[in-house]
Length: 478
Image (cartoon, rainbow, N blue to C red; front, top):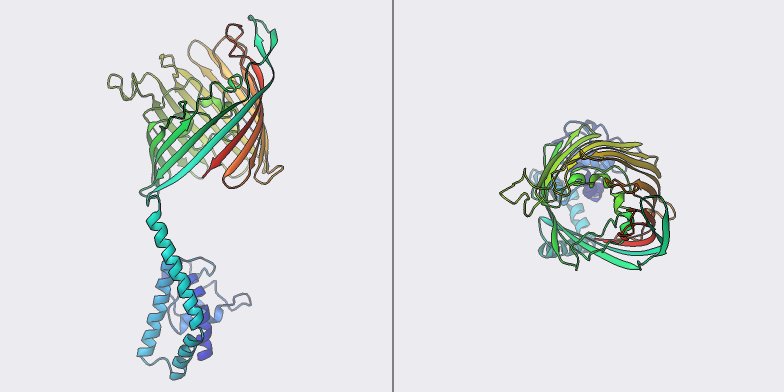
């Protein structure tokens, strides 16, 4: 009897952890009721588990599956509940005379022999509880998490700037008047949750104006800001789920078009240094950015329908009672259907309508997006057609990338983008090759080589032309 009790006491903390982690448990009376427990050589705790079940009656199994799930983790609450059940059973046995003097003497001897170990464990538990209490007292918020990101961009033009003269296809090469430039942006996201299935986000953002850095290539991806490092509220929205398949978002600022969709499909969005990696089809002549609302509906495991509306704010905007939410001068709408898998194909079709200039001349954009994921290698692209009633334009992008090349977690990507444009100039385009290198958990370095061609066809506007750039972006996330 004493030898069996000794084995039970040694194994009971582990066994209790295995037995009380389920949510729909029921008491079992014999070990045979648990279909996943058998006296095999690899089941080292079978004897102790059998004793806890049949001698002390303080182990439960899953009610529906009749399983014990011995490898499942437990919480401290579940351990306390299980230990209490076993102690109650032992107390009952003692009161009922179920433990003989030899067994009681064994328990007392074990307590004395392991007094030092028990005291050490008690000290560790006390230290952990004190540390936990300190963390709770000093935590930022019980409902809010703080996340931040800082991007620094170093950009150097090289080669010669080509400026188009006249309306033909000839040009002249001139020395570039651009120099090495640096711009930075910082973001602090305050994410609050009140139900566990919702998020209230308030984002503070500051950035120095990029002064048209990489203007010939469509600008920088992570360089937004009002200039002079003024701190402003950027994202300001509340999102929440309804049931298992519906999610909604209501925003007061900075949410439009691609912010409503579950995925922009192409993997260049984020790693790319140039802004057209976005992809740019979501932004072309689209307005809004003030009050917004939208939602997503999951259709099975792989299909998602996203929809959203965004209106500009300010004068003639959603907060101007003369125009209101539906009559804002600048608006955008989006509907996107996506197929998102864990395998080869991610794809989407989208329709957008908006007027970025607030001139009531709306642009309709129809787009398709595709990503083929072959594991470490991917091929992706987009195609879109935009029409504002007076002009139309077909624009597209395509590229490829390799994951975990040179360094673990790194991404080498390259893409070409035919940029949307309604003017009479030659088709604007840009090309980028980038290498994202995660230095550690908090820092990613992304060098890139970029070529942009945004010719206007006149010498009077030297702000446009073609140019090569070398860029280096450092992203700190915490």
